[in-house]
Each structure stands twice: as C-alpha cells, then as structure tokens.
Image 1 (cartoon, rainbow, N blue to C red):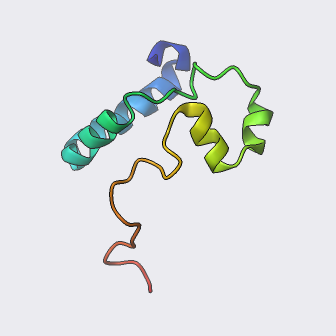
Image 2: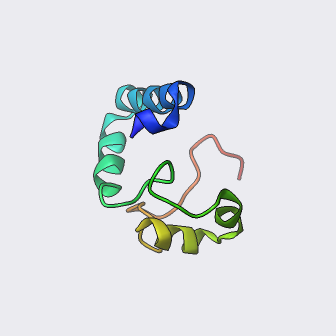
Image 3: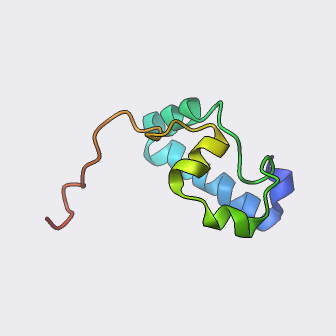
Length: 84
C-alpha cells in the first residue's frame, strides 16, 4: 500500500504509525484492529477527488466500509486541558 503513495507521503504515513506505536500503543493497536475491514482512500477508491470532497461524512464512511457511528467505542469528550 505504501508504494502507491510515493516516498514523501509514504514516509509521513509510516512515521505517523510509528509515533502512534510509541506514544499510544494500545490505542494504535485498537485502531488498527478496528479498521482492518475498511477500505483505503489511497488506492481502493476509484471516484474522482472532487466527487469525494462533495460527500458527507456518513456517505464517505459507507463507501469505505466504516460503521455509520465511526470506530470510537466511547462517548466523545474533550481532553483535560481543553477550554470549557
């Protein structure tokens, strides 16, 4: 999959995954498992970019095989340092 991205974008994706493994390994592994069945925007989608930009989040999730409610298994909340 990374070969189709080119060296620059592939390096960004790879470093992001490695940083996730170092900084939040349990969350990174959980995200990897949860997204195992989903499709990738990098190479699997054949729709033109401009058409993808017009989609709503729910439509894009359906196209990629992601559940309508997303992958999170908890209620959305702000971090402790966020302004109220």
